[in-house]
Length: 149
Image 1 (cartoon, rainbow, N blue to C red):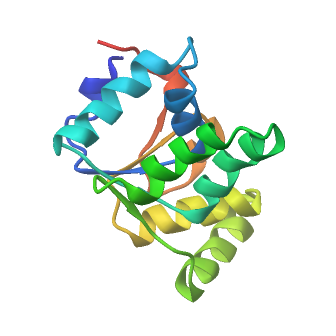
Image 2 (image 1 turned 90 degrees about the vertical axis):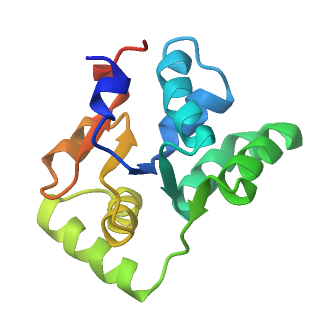
């Protein structure tokens, strides 16, 4: 299915880590599909939400490899871009994450990601983790299942 078709009824999307990394690092397998989403975000047709978990996961490798320019690109996109709402973790997110982790046996970072998406009122989550599809109440868009235009 084409990503644009899958996004037709989506107004606000949560950005998981993998799609952000694919876009910033121009991963040849996924960059074209990710570009469609980020173009919609940049144009204002789609609003985006992300969390400190996404940022921390995106920054780990650039910090390890001492690539400050790559780290800066992630920070600019996730924190400083007006098109993306950076939602901090709080007690509500922690409680919802614990509930999701208990119910679906998800890793804690994934539980926080999905909790922020739900609490922020996102219509969908953009991920490449098929395990997110088992969570009731979220519309998981998995990049591996999508095509570019």
